[in-house]
Image (cartoon, rainbow, N blue to C red; front, side, top):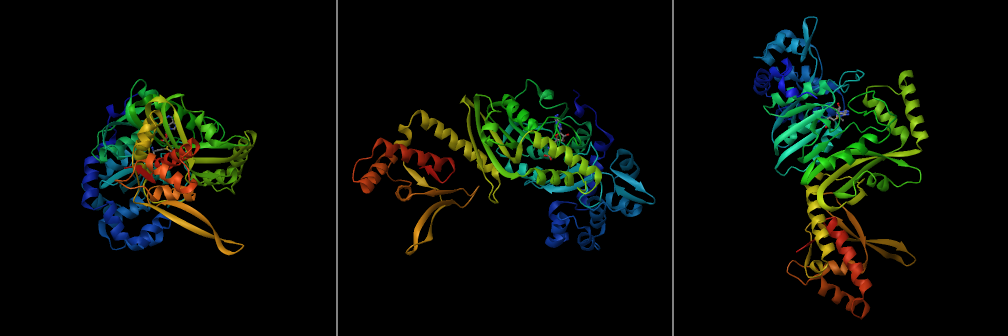
Length: 504
Ligand SMILES: C[S@@+](CC[C@H](N)C(=O)[O-])C[C@H]1O[C@@H](n2cnc3c(N)ncnc32)[C@H](O)[C@@H]1O
């Protein structure tokens, strides 16, 4: 294990001059969006260089930087020197940021602005194949991809003391963490990744501890308030074709390792936020598989499945991700071995999603559920709220009197919808559904008694005990039976857990 922050690489040493140039040329997220306009900006996301090139034709130094750094175009040396002044081009070439191409200069690395919510940050990574055709090398260091962005949006950002970013890559999660944590540590097995993460940190004037080593080995014995991880979770045979996605462990072994070992890295009350994958195997439910990865004690786990891919779609997607054409013979060979490994393990599908683990003092609890519908709100704030609600429910489980004596209120974003279905006599059958209009937009089908229970909930209203008694008399002409009360408490618990109602 080496502490890569001990030695500043020539690339990281470019940071002061490079930062001055990028700031002066206004190579920041807001200006880029304004100069490109929505259409060209979206074209960039679709890997279409021409609309972008046209949009920045008259954009001066910023146009040069967009063509050089975002599109990968070779640009005249004098224009690059002017756009990147005071950066010395020979130093930048020697450090590996730029390369000469005849009398032109091209980018040797990807450098782009990103607004993570607190203003522009710059991220340095390897060039991908989004705007120039290229096959990614085995040591390719990922830039800010869709998975990175989804983890950023899913990460709670309340201020904390310490964060560990496992598998930091270009350092994007660590840079984000520096916005809400006093101390940030990033680890990676790849020296190249740490070289780029160090440059990313320096360019943003951030002090991030970077440690080289496999999995949690570089931080053995340490504990953190938060762990974030976008690990090399790609499911497949036990091999490493690309460090950014393959762990060398078979199937979902990388996710199992990270999910099972992360709890030991958390301080009491600490929280891990991770992306993970799990296989769907014939005859086994995915929740049971993921549940078996958790220790018996000390974790409150919320696991959210966002998508399930069939094996063929999955393999094709990841081949393309590495810049391979599934029609090429070499790619077909990889696909053959990959699908054969899935067949041998009876894999029917590959699930993907978020894993949240909170360190608690008690037996492990798990809610693993599907969240496959669309929603816009970032999941990070929801995760924090989820664990607050879960803690309250734990207190209630040990002392149900607390729930019975509390009044409850329906959350402002909750709506009740009645859907009429065609029946023998026209539009008769009804389905009543509670909708959450924010966060993960949960929906719960409810019966009339539950709808009536919620109608009676008020901020300054009756405690649950009295509400349920009134409801029993209204619906059954008798006092509430133990079964009626138990059913009411179960419904209330489920609706609290999903943030549709709250203790008032
Ligand atoms: C999917 S990338 C994530 C990069 C970055 N954190 C992000 O969110 O975009 C996974 C990272 O894990 C690293 N990695 C692969 N195997 C590892 C291991 N055994 N231990 C630690 N990191 C590893 C890779 O080098 C890569 O940087």
